[in-house]
Length: 221
Image 1 (tube, rainbow, N blue to C red):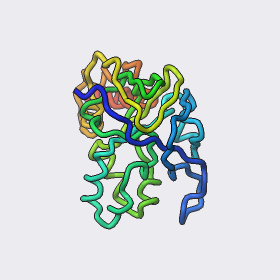
Image 2 (image 1 turned 30 degrees about the vertical axis):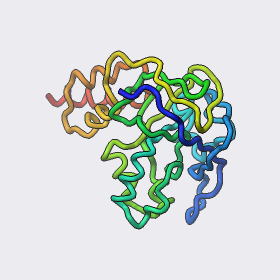
Image 3 (image 1 turned 90 degrees about the vertical axis):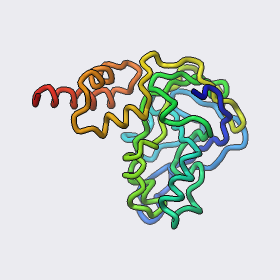
């Protein structure tokens, strides 16, 4: 497992109207040049257009692997020039970490801030709308290459060129890729659903989702 990588980009954005739609969004993020403060509300200077679907302590900071963009550029060549780090609305970009390496509950030091992986990111329609690729959001979810979200355990500062270091690995060893695989199964194994439904490190909304699946399977056994 990769435990230490360089942060290649840090992005923040203010709320503005979605192009061609008008609804408020903060998906348009710009790279920062110097370290910015980060706390349980997220990065300083970074906003949310929809506070019901975005933000909150378990969605304070988003991380997306930069290497995924080459995959999306190949899959959607018409949008390839725009498919570069930051365009999907992430805050943190790196090379060398992916959903197959990262578990819910892993603790990272991002610059001087201490954060914990809280859940996979589940992108909304806005990434498809922004890039005029209707299939993109579904493709991201179906592939499991969705990135992830952090809660902030200790405030600090993070900037491009800083190190992202995993300082504690979740004991259960259940990666984000494993979670997505389970999510897409029609009848996932009961023991896996039980684990995730009770996993304290996992955001409550995802625990409820797995608990609901578990209840349905047990009811229809």
